[in-house]
Length: 100
Image (tube, rainbow, N blue to C red; front, side, top):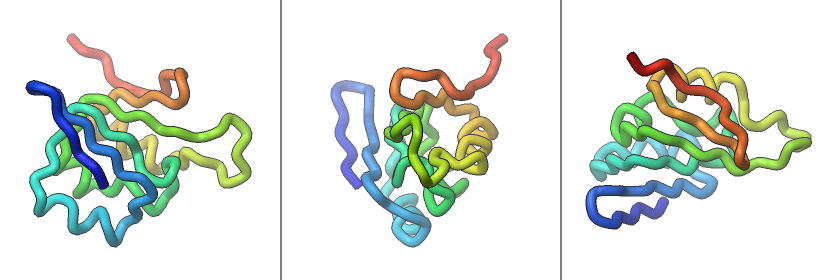
């Protein structure tokens, strides 16, 4: 995990973190505007507790268009949508919410 900030904007890059690592992250107060979703959006990452602690406005998922693992997983996209996180995948808008 790597967090960096420029002024009031912060980014959290999770790399290949999975549930076990993500359970420890909230103790570090990792609030960030942008979350780079871990492990290409696999079902073992982006747990609700992490999303509640980071409270990102945006998420980016790095994954190939025809990956054989089915990433990003539907449950991860659902968790991001439920947390009202605007989510992008390699230049493709995936989910979000209506404001207003």
